[in-house]
Image (cartoon, rainbow, N blue to C red; front, side, top):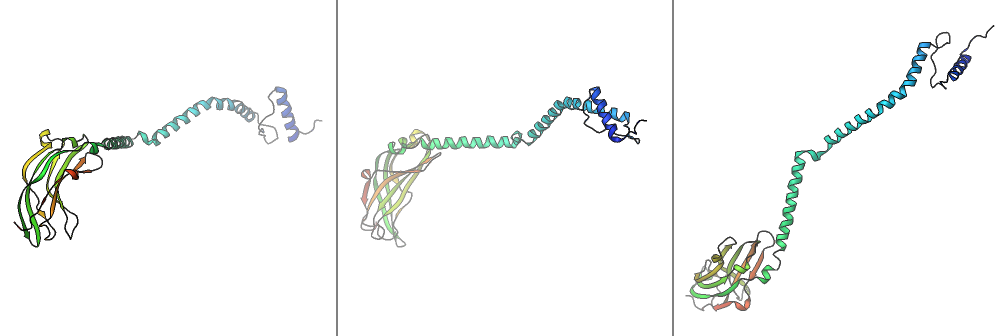
Length: 257
């Protein structure tokens, strides 16, 4: 009489059968029916899945990797702001501003030393005639004319837009030891013809009167001096003046005229 089959000896027989068939140790537990015996159709289907699953997985891995790379590239393209028009325009504008700044600095550096070694040629600046000296509202005021011969051409540079030329009268009083008054001025552009850069004027009447802050102008010695301002296209404003040794002076009468 055969022993009654149990669950334990059934599994043992099942393992021995698989070993004899060369299948190897199973990696799953077979499903059993009501009587403890496995369902043959279920067991064969699971066995077929177990054999075909690694092959299907290995075959599908390259395509999965390719799709993953494509999704990654699309995401990177969308997140990359360098591809937008505004960012490219911003880069171009700031690059242009940087180049302009560098060129401006180089232009300003090219003017260093020019104003020191290239001075205007001042041939004459002297009083021509003292027209009047009167007291207006408690202050002295004198009107006069002068002669001016000067060549401003050497003072120009390719980085200079214009030169502001003016005649200054300076004198000393007991109340104010240092008085400077502008009597006449002119603007010479770099685009002006060469003849306009040469000032040769006779008996030039002042634009602004020689006016004192009080009534101390009479009897004072007044010095006439030519000054100018360099106005560059880019760079620092420079102020030049005629040498003290080449200036002229005159004495204001002690009486009103």
